[in-house]
Length: 603
Image (tube, rainbow, N blue to C red; front, side):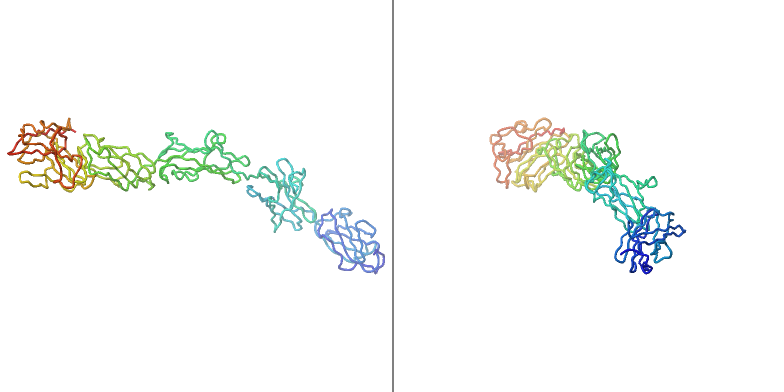
C-alpha cells in the first residue's frame, strides 16, 4: 500500500493512536492508524499543546521511521525536531491525508511530561544477613525503580558478582507508592561496607538518580553488612574474668565487691553493648560493662541478697555488636553465704565428760542449714558451740555430720545442762541440750559392776534400766542403791552398747567410815582421781585388818557384761584396783571398819 493524493484515501476516523501516551518534550512518539482504499504518498500531522505551541510534520511512505501495511501505517515523530517546543501538559495530534495540512481526518492526545519521579531511599533493614533496601516513589507515569550496589572496592554488582566498574541497575519491587530491593538476590554478599544507589524512571524517560546531580544526593546510602558474632578474646586472662576485689581469695560473700571483665571485639560493625547477668549475686540482671582500655570492658558490683545458695556461681557476659549479633561467655566464682536457719540439730549423747570421757569423739548432726534466701548451704566452715566452747565444723549440702572431742571443753566450764548450737544461725533455729559432767564411762549391754570413786554431786545414766546392790546383812538385792557416795559399787544394766554413766564430783573434802559386814560386801576402789587412777589393796583397805579367811574378789568379767548378776564369776584380787572398779570384800565372821578419805575433786 502507498499513500496517494486520492481524496477517497482518508485516514479512518477513530483509528489514530499513540503507542505510549506520554513523552518528554524532546522525546519520541509512535503514531499508528488505518486508511481507506487508495494510496496516499504523504500525510501531514499537526502537533500542538494547550498553550498554542504547534508545528506541522509531513511523513512520506518512503521516509525513515515509517512502515506501511495493506491498510495501516506506523510512524515515529521526534519531538525535539519541532520548531516550537511543547509545554508540559496535554498535547494533540491531528492528521490530514494530504501533503500539507488542510483539515483533520482524525486526532488523538498524549501527555508532555518533563518532571522526574519523586523517589526516596528511606531505610536499609538491620544488615545482619540479607538487608532489605526500602523507599517511596511517586509519579503519575512511573515506569520503574532500580538500584545499583557498590562494594568497598568500588565495583558494582552485575548480576553475578562485583566486577562492574559502572552502575549495573537491578529492578526493585514497586507496589502502591513503595519500593523495595531484597539483597538476598545478590551473590557473594559478604561482610563489609557497601553503598546503595537508587534510580527512578517514568514512561517519558525522565530519571531521578544520585548520578543526576546534587539535587539527588539523598539517593545514595551506605550500609555495613555484618553477619558475624562479636569475638571474646583471651588477652592474658580468661575470655571472661569474674574476680573478688575485696580480698582476692576467689570466694565472695555478701558485702564483697566483684569485678567482671571481658575482652571483646567486632571487626565489622563494632561493639554496641557488653552486659553481665549478675542477678544470682544480687546485682543487676543486665549490668553494663564499660570500655576500660583497648578492647577490655569492665564493671564491678557489690554482692547483696544472692538468689542462689553458696558454691560455684556462673555469671554470663553477653556482647552485642551494632548490627545485633550476639555472643556469650561465662566465668564462675565461689559464693559463701551466711547461715541463717537450721531445721534440726542433734548431739548424739545425753551427757559428755569434759575432764575425761571414754568416748573421745561424740557425734553431732544437723540438717536443713540454709541461707537467708532459703538455699541450702553447700560448702561452708562454721562454728558449733557447746556451752562456752567453740568447735570448727563444716557444712556440706545443707548438713553437718561431725565428731567432736568433749575433753577439748575447758575444765573450768561449769557442769550441768548447756546448749548445743550453730553460732551463725538465727534465734529461731533448732538447738539441742547436753549435760556436761566431769567424767563419763562407757557401759555394755547387760549387767556389769561400776563404782563411784569420789563423792559425786550427780550421776547421770544413758541407756540403762536398772541398778542394784547386794546387801550381805539380809542376803538380798537393793534395787535403789546409793550411786553418789565414794566407795559405793553397784550392778548396772545397759540396754545396749551405747549405755553410759557420767559423774559430776563434789568439790568438798570428807572422811567417812567404811563398814564391812560378815559376808560379801560390794564396794569400789577410791583412788584420788586428781593424780592417779589406781590404788593398791593396802591403801584402799587402810586400817582394815583382814583375817586369814577374809578375801578380796574382783569380777572375772571386768571387760564383759552378763545377762544375770548371779552368773558373774569372781577371782581373788591380784593387782592394784582401778578407779570405778567394783569388788567384793569377803568377811568370814564379824564386822570390820575402815576410813575413806575423799579428796576434793580438782578438774
